[in-house]
Length: 418
Image (cartoon, rainbow, N blue to C red; front, side, top):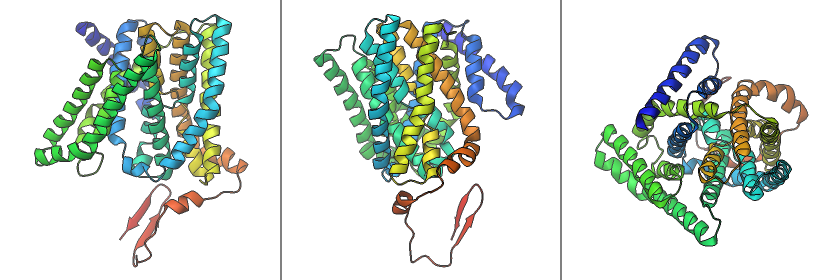
């Protein structure tokens, strides 16, 4: 098994590396290249091996997102982010569930309710890996729309964890579901306890050694993954809890982020190439289901979130850029589909449709990201001629005692010079 996985990884990285060399001078996003490489090598690698690689790739990247998630930064926009996410969940999820149920009945699926739930989850949840990756600089620079997108990703991940815990049971009995949810809550609570009371002593004990801090963080990840395996829940949940456990600040988390970033691209490649490799050429049923997911994710979700942000008092630019990074199928939806495949509770057609929709929406997201400023200037700003900044003004603070300082505004950066 180990030798087969090593050979599979070699094939994936050779294909991805060759395509990246060919297209590097075109200044393209690597995401489409990884997906294309996956499609090319998909016939060479067995699906069971792809599923294993996808789970580990997603688990590590979810861990990275957990590390980068700063709960303190999210507090200023968490209410608005939750309001928008809940609004989207209440509007889009029932519509998606109904469409998934009707499509499953029309195509003769077994277990209509479960397959409709998988369809609805694929439509409703947005990708932390893709969205946060594209908004990395905005999140790092503490821009409002970056924090809004992060808060919605965080909310979606929590919803996905609950769904993953519930749907990971072969039989949906009250005792089985309660046990799974209890295990998940235990891991998340343990992560928060370490975040509050455990990581700072670890940094002090390391006494300035970045290597010890990094090894301690990796040890936390391994402990949570082992606990998830022992409790019989997805390793992705353990990885998410481990990421939350590690503090994200400039003094304590810098060594961890630098060390993790050095191997992050390895797992990014694994994730996107395996998604591309799992894509199957669509039949009529797969194509219809995938098209339904794509339309709802790309067209309906951003509009609902955009209008909600506008209603909450954000200006059109902030609302547009926050919602435009949330139009892709979530990696948690892929984990739900993979887990369901292992349990035999999802039809092959629904699984293939979700994978195909994930690949297409991730590809479209990278394209939209490159042209979102043009889209905003030529379309959105003309449709919404009046703007407001009530919420941004409320959460912004200027110290009235500051004197003799200079603020420099350029096209791309905001610089504050004391």
